[in-house]
Length: 364
Image (cartoon, rainbow, N blue to C red):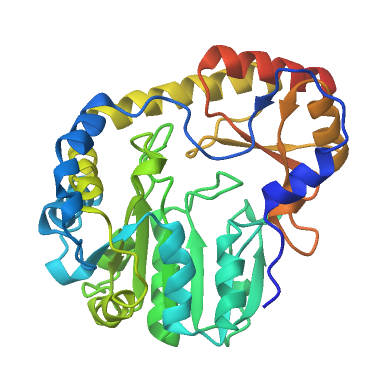
């Protein structure tokens, strides 16, 4: 297997000999820098006693119910018990689900979260890169498909471009999944970091087109962004029960059961709606600062600025010389996708973001 180097490894190689100030603002990784809410930490501590027990691969009902309840509150979609599996974050499911499915050919947006490509390589799948550009508003189009894909990953809200597909657009993909008997998974990990209107889920789209059993349709989501708790590693995959039944059996062999203390803490996080609103407001403030300083539009969701520049490599090097670390767009894409863009993660408090963005403004 030939895996591409991860974007951050490429970035370290690019910058290894570049002189830089002692203090560097790192705006590269999508890791929230706000404190995890105290009630989540207390739940974790309270339930450490359960470390003396093996966890079930299927997860405890307390966690599964909290996740189904979240989907009901947020998307007005009521799931049956066998239509959701808790996962150890979403990175692991994004990697091992294609290994389970064994698709002959995968399609996913380009640029992209690199685990999509890694999974395709590990599964021995051919890849159709669906290029995202200004011409298609950074959204994949059905016309980009080659017709022989049997697994498609969507990512809305999108990392790194921050684009959001509306409900009607998601409905078109669901209808395609049914017509062509193709499995479609939407990575919805940024669904709770919205600036105005809550982004839709592909599960909503499935219901809207009458696909109430979610045939060929799956969604994944995570607690990491909404609760500022990436280390909690709590996610889920939900949708087609026939696929999930077989996938759950596969998971019993992968060793990815979630430790019980983490499940109890995750339950508390999934039930909470107070702190996600607090974090949303912080990111909105950061976007407003970015608009004021850089003149960019505020996106509909995520905490990323997909900034257009003349040369993403030169811009990244110059920014690092001045004490700001950003990620070149080409490191997240293939076939020239992402060139002339840098991804900026607005994950710190407003004052740090303001200082860093003013430095970037000088370069622009």
